[in-house]
Image 1 (cartoon, one colour):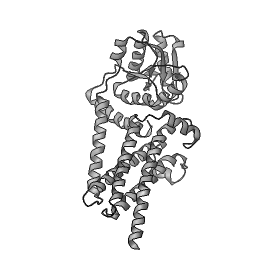
Image 2 (cartoon, one colour; image 1 turned 180 degrees about the vertical axis):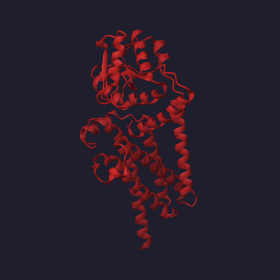
Image 3 (cartoon, helix red, strand yellow; image 1 turned 120 degrees about the vertical axis):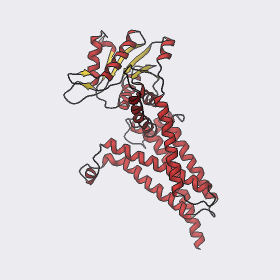
Image 4 (cartoon, one colour; image 1 turned 135 degrees about the vertical axis):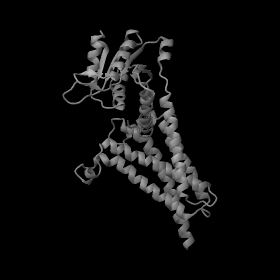
Length: 358
């Protein structure tokens, strides 16, 4: 009788773990699309229809979740096939970890709906986006640990849960993954050469916003981006210029300051579009996609920013289905500054790939 109970419990645990992985796969794939859409419910028929019709299996973030979840499922199935050998506490550990990760994921999803007047406000002083970013990052690392642990249990001789071995392997994988992304960001080559050689003219160039200094003056970083946009317009590479970026209340926005600079240079106002509400690259590209790129039936655009910023920008454009060339501004940066910026940008690229936030 006891053996039957244990066998039944083990089967339930295996079914739970497989169901957990399938849920994570669907939820994480759909979440980033839902987060960057106008749909209210992730389970609405209209969203699901849009999601499945526009889903790109080759997108980096999608490939990550598919690969990780499939590896986990294969390891779990292998564990179930050797249920008489596997250490039962190992399976229980995986179940406990999966439950904990679901609570973390639920908090990340619902934390925006928790009243700030509760104890939550006193415990966490970060912005809603900051809390979301940290919580989702913890979830992703914990899920990676679950995948590694399942593989260690599945392929070890004794089929036991080796905690420290799993921790070290997880840390190693995370560091290798981050290192690869950092190298791509640091060595990113923009599309200037391609544009010059093809001598093509694209529909528009987008100047991404940057800081505005006192007296409504563009910072050196923003000025170089404006200059590059003007250079491309003057040589006929772009037909129009899109200026993006919000600002503090009572001050001119980044987009408006950029517009004034271009008007001084003689760019006709009819060729200038401005977006002056956004506070992030993701918001800027999202606005461009929803309000200009699709509505004007544009085919190709150029995005102008600093070189360290262009890998993420390119990935965001790819996510929205925008055919974009990237062009780096001429902002002079030391090797140390480029290195430091790429450290931050590498994290931002990973967060966008996995969760669609940025």
